[in-house]
Image (cartoon, rainbow, N blue to C red; front, side):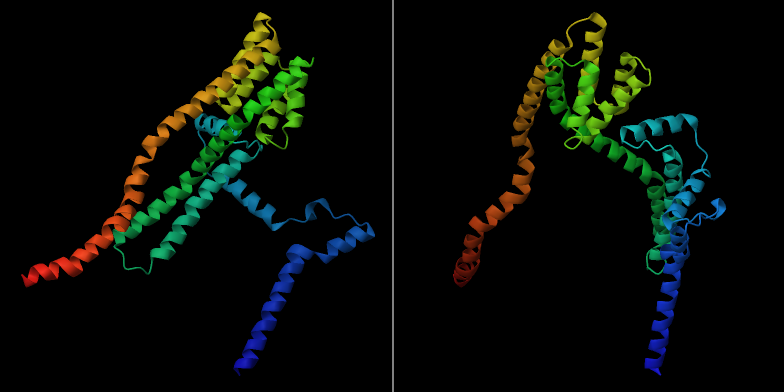
Length: 305
């Protein structure tokens, strides 16, 4: 009886899985239509499950009321994080609604059968709801900081290439295009920002506005200084190559000073790891055998006396 039930259950699971796979993934009728040249109707276009999930998140994003002022701030953070999808705001608010709904339900199921105090259970559910609602904000902030760090790391190489290109006879616009091509693999974030400046120039914006948009998009201090140097050189008519060379030397000196500052702070930062991690083990190794010897030899001797 058990063997028959197992075989029946196996056959049922296989049939259900095959049916779902054929309907959602394989779609043999669509393959036959492509081979025979029959075009599907526009209202019967195939829909992938991931697209259904994206549409659900987008619809949930329309449920949450949005303050225009907060939306502008969040959109700037998304741009600094490298997210430039036109539906990014809807996905963002939809994820907030979805996570703020799903995480409390999962937490409620997790603590339902526990013996904790009801107040603690309620606090855990509320904490899960807060994490789900504010989690996307923190994700955007972390991603923006990570991208700013990558831009800050790749900016010296980009500046050196820019100096070489300008000194070889290229104009500033062509030099930025060449730097964007050369750094596409090594530093894609810097390459993307320089390419956006080129696109804005091709669209008809002034170089001054494009450079200011570059500084505003990234919000990186070193890049803001570079933009200020380029704007001043363009405004006062000084040589771009000379200005870039001077700024590159300044950035090298600044990087050396930052490295020396971190090296000077290293001794102070090592105090706590040495005190809490190394000294206890050192005491165990050096004083431990003596303590054991005192316990085994000296204390019985004193008791006998």
